Length: 150
Image 1 (cartoon, rainbow, N blue to C red):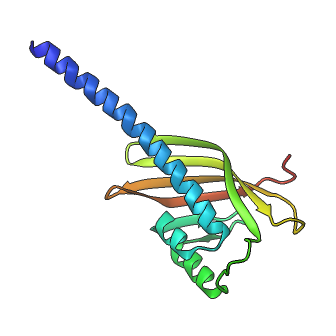
Image 2: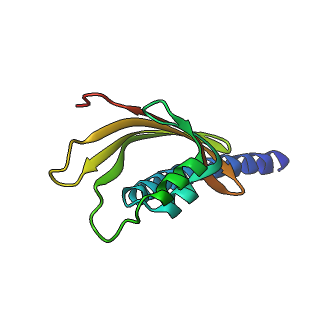
């Protein structure tokens, strides 16, 4: 009877672990998509939620900065009105690796310009997320432009 109880507990914990991993992957994917929608319209609140205070961001041009720099730059820009965004951001080929309370999220970022206003931008992005107090946030980000992407 004791072996049966231990086996059932082990099975429950294994299933729970798989379910939690799936829900964390779904949550991270949803967070990424919501953030990109917000970034498309220069939503400061989306950036405040997504980036951790101790963020290290390395841009595709090789510049390194943190969350405060991102927010300061956004607040210095004029507020977006009701007009269509100049560029709409989206993610493709999302890969997520969970490591306990941390996760690596890699994807192809597409920057689709408004009709007739430029060329499609493509980047490989990799973000390191940490779950603190039940909330996922990005602590490190690397953006790499894909030259002449097909």
